[in-house]
Amino acid sequence: MEEVKVVFYGVGAVGSLIAKSLLEKKGVKIVGAIDIAKDKAGKDLGEVLDLNKELGIIVSSDVDSVLSKTRPDIAVHATSSYLKDTYPQIASIIKHSINVVSTCEELSYPYYSEPKIARELDMLAKKHDVTVLGTGINPGFLMDTLVITLTAACQRIDKIEAVRIMNAATRRLPFQKKIGAGLTSEEFKQKIEKGEITGHVGLKQSIAMIADALAWKLDEIRADSVEPVIARETVKSDFIRVEAGKVAGLRQTAKGMMKGEGVIILDFQAYIGAKEEYDAVTITGVPTIKQKIQPCVHGDAGTVAVIVNSIPKVLKAPAGLLTMKDLQVPSAAVEDVRKYL
Ligand SMILES: NC(=O)c1ccc[n+]([C@@H]2O[C@H](COP(=O)([O-])OP(=O)(O)OC[C@H]3O[C@@H](n4cnc5c(N)ncnc54)[C@H](OP(=O)(O)O)[C@@H]3O)[C@@H](O)[C@H]2O)c1
Image (cartoon, rainbow, N blue to C red; front, side, top):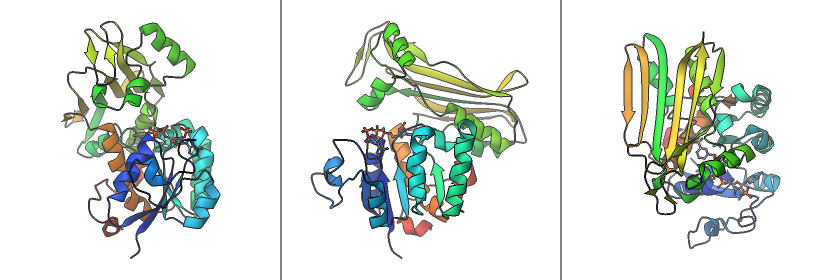
């Protein structure tokens, strides 16, 4: 059988990491790359990925030309978090009858924030007989798919809590900047107001996906405001030094409410100097389940894995806009990708 042909739509930080991982993998072939960034479009993909060799693939901003010339089986899409921005991009891929796996956070459970766009994408995907999936490490796995999987061992569930705490010092500089590390509280507040710091996108989508899997009708999904985590002592990463009293990162919580009670509670914390890094899920019920992954799963490495491992699952899935809870039980595709088709 021929190799699975892949086009990249967005070769920024995450798209590049996924592309590098696919270059090492058997059974897949990168046949094209799309990006509008001035420092990428027109260059060889090997140069964009810092490989010290050319791959013979020129990164192009002409979506239709790349997709019609290369005829890939699937597009790995990694440009932006919000469906309003990514909807036309994803629709343009579907119109070429090409499957999509995307890191767009809102696409992980689009029926919550953008039900109209979700229905349109679903209809378009069915019309062109392709599958579309939004996924990643979070949203996509740690605070939704993994939680849903753990509920399989419960007879009764009263409450679900998931916590992710990461020490941002071990992450890329752009991530440390994205969470406001090193700012004063006032600067943090201003950047939140201007939308320059958005916090983590996806908590509401994760809650909606869990509730849907359990057939729970939530009265409301409440996202609390993004709060700065203030350093109690001086903390530092390789790039940023945070004096005591300044912002080390951020914390964000969201609750799925039923009859005035928070029944699904997600707590995301990312800051420089976190002493303990972990992903924890507590399901209170019969039986009560407590699960802790320590240290927490690395965000970039985990995202690359979830996207790559989803490729054969997406190719085998029925047509339409699917979410992680609609696919086969998630698992790694460690061997030649064609073995999982
Ligand atoms: N679900 C998850 O677990 C997960 C994990 C990691 C990342 N993500 C999300 O994945 C997205 C990508 O992340 P990233 O860190 O790689 O971002 P990034 O470094 O900003 O890369 C995005 C790339 O896509 C390009 N782009 C933007 N709009 C485009 C368009 N219309 N057509 C073609 N290219 C376009 C950007 O160009 P410009 O720079 O010129 O805009 C940039 O080169 C983000 O929204 C991120 O939040 C999700």
